[in-house]
Length: 465
Image (cartoon, rainbow, N blue to C red; front, top):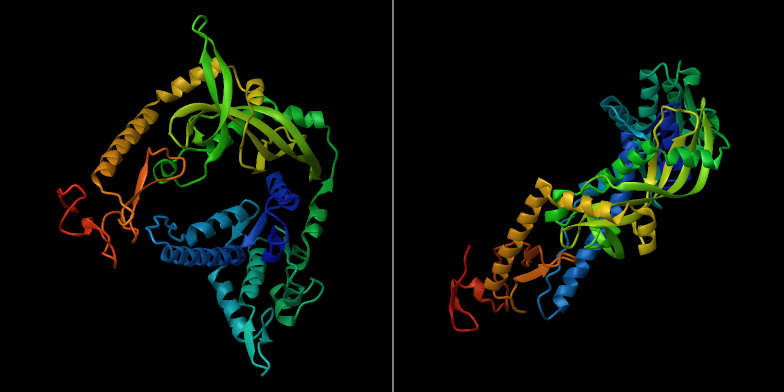
């Protein structure tokens, strides 16, 4: 087990060669990568604190902008969802290493050591008067988690990797208490100070033939795996459709023209669009293979290659929610083995899809007739027909509401169509973020806040709750 400290995980990017190698080692099954719970929370907090500060700054700036604007400003910041943000980054790091629970016993011992200033904890001077503050509880919890794992897994060698030599040392000597922690573990606990030292122990560079790798990537099983991954990563969810939440993807929509004589279709042109996701697993074609590296890990050779795929098929458009034929280029970093026939290709990381040009779409996508048939089949699926009906009903209801409500510059009710929604879904927003009730604010000339009032045409109107 390779147990990583936070300073090691912060020393490289999540889309780097180091990250790829750690994933490769784990996939090869030679060594597992682990991160103590304390480290995972520390990494998440390093992302979350600046994020919260930026949100607070944006909130203050928006409030100042509203105050300075003589008319109603309808823009609202979404609620701060710090837990969702932190969970995103926890998941990102869990793709590199598995979470190792920090036990209650380890947390208690760490707290006791910090209180008593015992290694790896310490006291630091914080001002000119020589006052000291006890610190190091988290370091102690990280250390004890690694030691505890070694004791609980007698068949494994633990590689504890940390650049924090001030508190943990460099592995050559330890304070008496930390030495006692490792007593009788012997060579099963290996303390290293850099990721490079770990990689040198478990990997070695290798050479592979480019065409051999290309053949693996372009075989039917590999293309099927990429198609399934694309469908999973670019899936259409309820949140995307009704709440406009979740990622959207760039693609090129194909305009297909039918020959009335033969009944065949051809692609006339394409147009960049945003899609919510695929209605079915897309067709995948290997476009090109770039940077390639290979390492021997135990008995097998593993390759990491940058690969550009062409994806095409029916998808749901973000602005109209219609099903159309689209195509996109998807660049990924792929892991494959040239010596292990039982291994499957794995996506180490990927970039956001990019829209195809018309020549690219025509050259790499299936025939226009086949795509047109798939589009019509997707449109008749019960789930999509139900969705279309719901969207149409919602649009009609909101149109009636828009005609009923009186929208003026001095009215807190503002009909706002979110970007790219094409007025299919409108969102009514009030100053207090309540969708229906808002307290009167000083200076408001709002007849909707009065039990009875006359509209601009002299008609009597009444607020409905």
